[in-house]
Length: 201
Image (cartoon, rainbow, N blue to C red):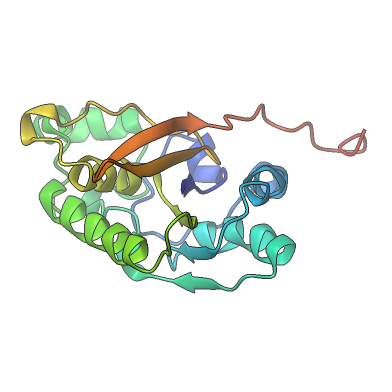
C-alpha cells in the first residue's frame, strides 16, 4: 500500500514542496489520524516512510494504532524541485514556462532518477514481505506516481498515465500471476475535516 502524506500549508497554497521539509498543517494531522484508522484495518505487517517530517508524521498514528515501527527510507523522499521549491504553480509558469511545460525543474532531480530511486525502494520493501503480507509505504505525490510507473513497468511513452494523488489517499498494488498490478488507486480520498471547537462533533 502506497500512502501519500497529509496536507501541508504549502499544499494548500499550491507551492512546490520537493524535499523542503514542510510539516503537516492542522488539516493534515487530522487527515492522518482519520486515514490511519482505515489503513490499520488492512492489517499491515510492515511500515516504511520517507524521512521528511510530513511523511513521518502521517505514519505516526498508524504506528501508534498497530504497534509496528516505521522504517525511514530516504529513497521514498519527494522529487527535488531545485529552483521551483517554495514557488506557487503560477510563479513557476511565469518564471520557467519551458521547463514547466516539460515538468523539468531547473537544478532539480531528473524524472528518470526519481523513477529509479522510488521503484528500487518499492522493490526492496516488496522483497521483505511474506506471501500474503502487506507493507505500507508513506511517501509523496510525485515520488509515488513516478515510482509506481517504473515499478509497474510502464514505458516512457506512458509517462503521466497515472493521475494526481490526493493528500492522505492510498493506492494498493498486488502481485497476481507474477505481475504487479494496481488494485486500488487514489483510494480513501477523504473530505477535509472541519476544524475548530466542533472538530470532534
